Length: 553
Ligand SMILES: Cc1cc2nc3c(=O)[nH]c(=O)nc-3n(C[C@H](O)[C@H](O)[C@H](O)COP(=O)(O)OP(=O)(O)OC[C@H]3O[C@@H](n4cnc5c(N)ncnc54)[C@H](O)[C@@H]3O)c2cc1C
View 1 (cartoon, rainbow, N blue to C red):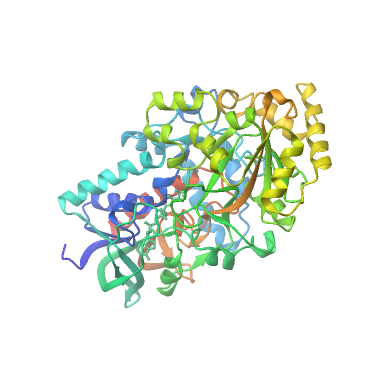
View 2: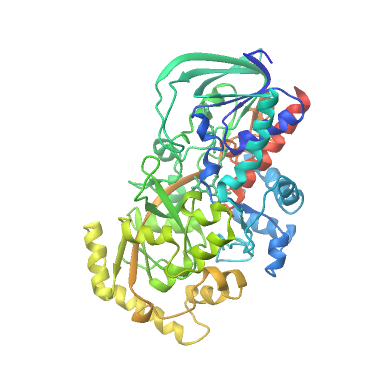
């Protein structure tokens, strides 16, 4: 490989880029892998992730007595996606192919590369409406041992092995600003060399330019991630027709490098961009008391028991229950005219039900050591990172009685929107539903339902109890922000990762994978995600793009 020419160029060394580069190099191709961040940032967002993967009919599910199938998973996927646009042809085809992969080869392929999963399968996005609507009918969220770093490790290992052999060249602090074409074919990229960076992984690095570069290749694969770290772009593409005006304030669930620049740059080279208005932002964001990146937010992954109120103290209706329907809940919260909402819960619920998303918030599982997991999860109190948020987080109010709690909530926002009598009436009415093992309240029914699943009963759903009973105190209120995370639309591709132009034909020499391509196809989730499908989509689309490009270079 001469310094400026390789068989393939991969733009972005996140998970999708690592997978694509490893596949290309395995096929004997020379690869230049460029990233705007420093060498300590390999793996991109996936490093920070919880490492949850959507797998179907896995041994882990079977051991937990979960009956799953490709047919049920596809029913759930299509019910969630709601594909309804002409340009949804490839997103849908990619979704169908992914579900087949997730129910087939995926686990064995990853297992063969050394990945293992936590034995208790999580039940994310339960939907809460009808069998043909949104949500996972069964638990499918498989947390990888070692969390995000455990997902990155096998692909980083493969890339580094190829670097040692001289097949892959890594160029860090190289920011791509142009995709180059020759006679209608993509033949390279150009951009700026950024000043060396000494910041820790995840921290905002400088954009000081020290020079220019130009690189040529037989194919260019764009794997540059989504737009979640760029709130201006999030606001520009916000689906006002479906969700109303974007929130005035949001926290960032992704590092600063998730800037979305490459989408417009790739469009300039002839790529079509579709489904830009489809996004996946969370409604349970906390301001990180110990931030790494700017405006750093952490998502609570809640169990089913916290009561959910909007900024005015109005209880959210089903299916807007914790962990059920992210998009419906976002819409409901914004309908209040405010950009935050409240969880009201108690100590028994926080101990069993609060999990925080992110590898650094789960040091026990990230360590991959059983001893650490048992100490953290079965010890007294909530896991230490949750307790730390309760102690230091600016969004938490803790009180022994409801009156004091309400005073604290109103003090925190300075808005005095929460009325004690009204909140008390809601909690008392809810508590009365606890006298029988069945109820009319959809949330209480959901709690009983969850506890029929062994994994929830053991780890995720608190024993049904009355929240006004001081034995379960103190009471806790948590102010929840909107947290930006995933981009569901993006560069339009076919299942092989070839980028399509506005005429629907492949742009010669151009591929895309991972979040920049809506995780495959230009948006294989449609409107709603089933969770664990983002890392899975990066792996699937990175593999497909790398393998296909290798056959044509
Ligand atoms: C805290 C957290 C928890 C998560 N948990 C889960 C989970 O449990 N399960 C799940 O499925 N998903 C999860 N996700 C989502 C998932 O991690 C991401 O969607 C996925 O890792 C995106 O990978 P990517 O390779 O497409 O992009 P990225 O990881 O964003 O990588 C893109 C890379 O491209 C580089 N780049 C961008 N533009 C340029 C340019 N112009 N020039 C050069 N380089 C450029 C960036 O610096 C970056 O390194 C989580 C995400 C976060 C942040």
